[in-house]
Length: 462
Ligand code: GLY
Ligand code: MN
Ligand code: MN
View 1 (spheres, helix red, strand yellow):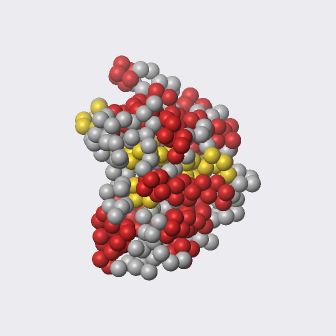
View 2: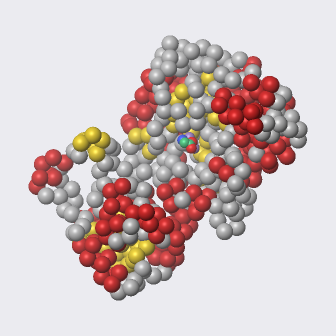
View 3: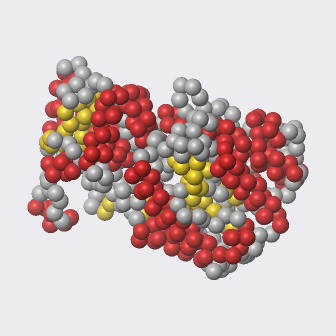
């Protein structure tokens, strides 16, 4: 937890941007795995964490902008809780830790909101994403379930995004540390790769590192020789020489901050020529981001550059044809990279995605593309200092997608389907780094993680 001044300042800024009404924050609750007392690892809601810093379940808070007061709602542990879960500081002392003057029992929240509603005041809340909090919001505010999302407060969403998207120095320091831990996860996977081992042995070791140095993984580890399935959580295959292994993994700090890296490398420790040719295209797309990303440029432009690099590289290999810049703009490389170049990163691995990607990655001046591939870009807007984005280009050979596009003759002017068919079974390659936008450009977060083919060959299996 940061000092209480941090949370006070954040809340004041939010209050000044939303201006009036009651801003309601619901913390997360314990989530049962298979029966109520056997729970998943507790994860606090990221907004609650950002504005209050408290990592305990069953809390709520209000910032009352009309009455200029803040209240934390929660229940002190009873002796029954203490027997099973240990003692906890009182709710009042938790409130003081984050600079909130007042605390009340959780049950008092309903009455507080009812009075505010009766007085005709606006209750601002963020779109709920957990079912228990949807039920609670419905009970508290009387809004039908199907209307909860659209009833969320746009001024509050925009105010939260404006604060959370620009990371402060103390947040960047947290990010650096958790990026280093993410790098260690990947180094273990590289060193552990050997034909005959199970993918899950590597995934489990990487996850163990995230738990020993932090709170655990920032999302379920993706580690698969079938890298063409973008979010492949199956780890049951035996590693085989001749195949590429894609590992997309990151760690979450005890403070909640996340890292997110991807590396792809040959199981055998030696790239074949065909693998190296495709790999080097993805690497170039990844590296050029570091030359382009800076304040004032739209991340969409950087994404478009990655598409152009992929089109150029694949044209040189005969898989594509025509003018690469035109092909990129039209969206033809989406056959090979059907996702965007990256997303914001912070307390969430896809930062603030619960608020709606269009509020986070786009704004009034720049809307999301409707073209397949470009439309998958989660963050397209103009970069500012303090943004943290991922840089994750890829090339994948997805048999069913190739078959559909070929049948439809899609982008036949740019794609040599005969040649593309030769790559079915190749798998997929993605290279992902975490990038901080600085005042003048950008820089990599975390210690360097090998990505040059020679560097990878020197470490795989060793
Ligand atoms: N780990 C999911 C992603 O890279 O977006
Ligand atoms: Mn990733
Ligand atoms: Mn990512």
